[in-house]
Length: 99
Image (cartoon, rainbow, N blue to C red; front, side):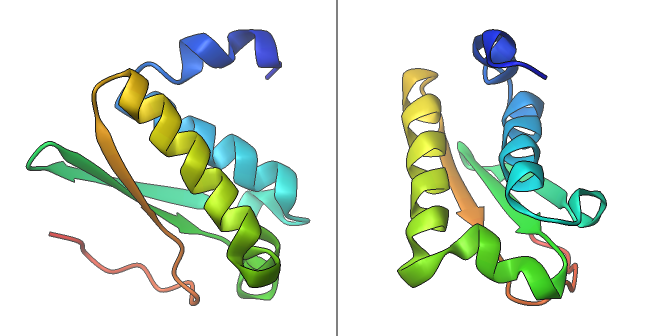
């Protein structure tokens, strides 16, 4: 994927999921272990980003700066599209149902 397609990519909710995956896969050494779960309700879309346990620090960053930057990008894009989004990065690769 190149950056010229980014504006097309971030328009829909599933596209936001792909956007999160794209960022995370380029930060870690094991991109095949990256997955994103998406749930929506009450006008809010929630994303959960999962990476290999050994690479969680790469997506969180020192003092959470990388995670904050990803969240800032998502907030900016979603506000432009009139949506509200949240990103959760669990510290263990345990998928649970989110209501």
